[in-house]
Length: 315
Image 1 (tube, one colour):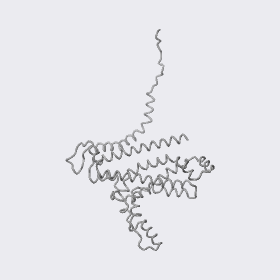
Image 2 (cartoon, helix red, strand yellow):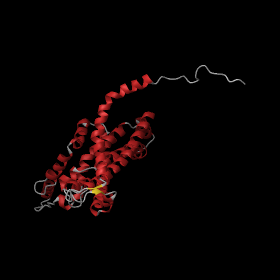
Image 3 (cartoon, rainbow, N blue to C red):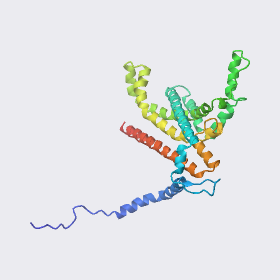
């Protein structure tokens, strides 16, 4: 059988030159911002990564060179760093859980209609808008101070109502340092959790709630079987985003306790290693570990956000 010669190809050839030129024309205005972002974010991280493999202590300049994984092994075996990791986990878990519970309670209250709800919501959001260092100073001097702090003043007033003449005047920071730091962080992060959960409550399908109430469901049953399952992803989102930021918290620990009394978390220990021990290699290795842990948490957070958005689109 003779072979038939085709005069033109079966698949039409697409001239991609003009199309690619148009794509690059759209991307070109973004290139300066992309290059600037790479310079200020990625280059410092690459430098930190390189330093983490070096023996570099400013107090011992003669002993400088390639350390391999020595700095990472030192971070893993140093008892002080291990203690700071445990403190970081305790601070993060306790602050996130308490903030979520308080935020859920406040969101349920704000989901009800009452006069002045907008003003109350604005006032409850205010702690999250305070600069972290200012919030820590507020708690240290206005609330915790044993001589003129509001907490001891309230104890004196309550003691006086019952005829007491020698009210207890505890030094809150020295007697309960971790709780003092956790209370300041909970105060600042509860509004953030409240905003996320309030958004979830207001996206709840009202017809399903009304149908459940008409069928005789109690408020607890509506919360247990309708509200809580609907808020599951919002709770996960708040918990993960809060964990990312609280893991990196430095202001409250530095301002309230200066890292003493067992409150030194990983960021504060890195600060001590870098600026006080001048061990740049070991501090960089600890910083790389914090970045990797934050990336792992952020990956879970982004997956939750993507799942949340997919569900919103479907609904």
